[in-house]
Image 1 (cartoon, protein in one colour):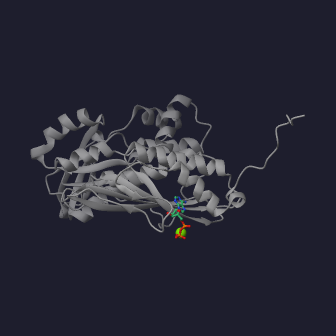
Image 2: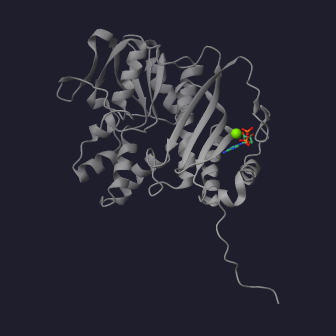
Image 3: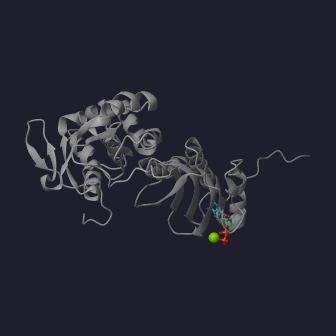
Amino acid sequence: MADTQPKKTKPETIKSIGEFGFIEKIRESLKTKNSSVISGIGDDAAIFKPASGHELVFTTDMLVEGRHFDFKLITPWQLGAKTMAVNISDCAAMGAKPTVAVVSIGLPKDYPMSDVEAFYEGMKGMGEAFGAQIVGGDTVGSDNFVVNIALIGEVESGKALRRNGAKAGDALLVTGNLGDSSAGLHALQHPSAKNKDITAALIKRHLTPTPRFTVGRALSTKRLATAAIDISDGLSSEIHHLCDESKLGAEIHEEALPISSSLKAYCEAEGLNPLDFVLSGGEDYELLFTVPLTHISQVIQKVPAETGTPLKSIGRMVPAAKGITLITRKGERIPLKAKGFDHFAKK
Ligand code: ADP
Ligand code: MG
């Protein structure tokens, strides 16, 4: 008689299938027909043929369990998608197209394979949505889950968006809304929050950010921006980086800062100040960029229509001696300190 009882098997782990079994599984799921990938997983290194007339951009981002994320708040699939998205965001801020990525991963030996596979599905899906292919990586045992993606992008020669190209008088623009992601994290950490519809929208922005790829490309290919940076650590911190590199100051108008209705409603309900999230919250992954006044009407009229991404002019670049200033709704001028998240800052 056939055994009809479902067998109780232990979940597969990296320990049970071994490093090479693990790599085989990943290799199978990451097969590609992309003709610029001459060789992917399986050799000592991957081979990639860049498009002619392009320059390569390199970026890398590492996320450590307990430091950057908590598996109580994010699923493996979401973490995979987010890790890839933050790297693609760096490419977008350079105006480049993502191409190939290598993924280094540190895994506890009893970590379930099904979770690793979901993590890879998340990375792969986000990568493919923007043209990035995983072509290799490295695997080590580790007490905590650690992941690092190194991503290569390509951009038409001479057209990369740098942080150092802004000129005094340029308008300062930002994509989308600011502060939603950090408010989403706040909502996850304070689950008593009342309005679930509002918190859901903010939490989504925190867990599954969208890189502003099409905006970055529109700005670089048409040479519409003089400088750009992605907002990973909060506006106040990123504006300092842009100003330092371009050797300029800036004026930002509080009333022009793009704040979503969800963030407003959340802050009202919780007795919080949206400006704290907008200026000092992190992980928005919006683009902050500068546009010469000669191009501003073209950018404001055409880029949102072409990319589906709203843009807002929030201020302008000024000579370095004027510093970096926030002009409040009341017309007060306050020096804007870089309060964004700094991993090595004293808490
Ligand atoms: P080596 O010892 O030469 O570095 P590995 O055994 O680490 O080679 O890797 C074998 C192949 O599997 C390589 O092509 C490598 O890029 C790929 N690889 C290893 N770990 C991963 C991973 N976590 N994700 C994707 N590819 C991986
Ligand atoms: Mg190796």
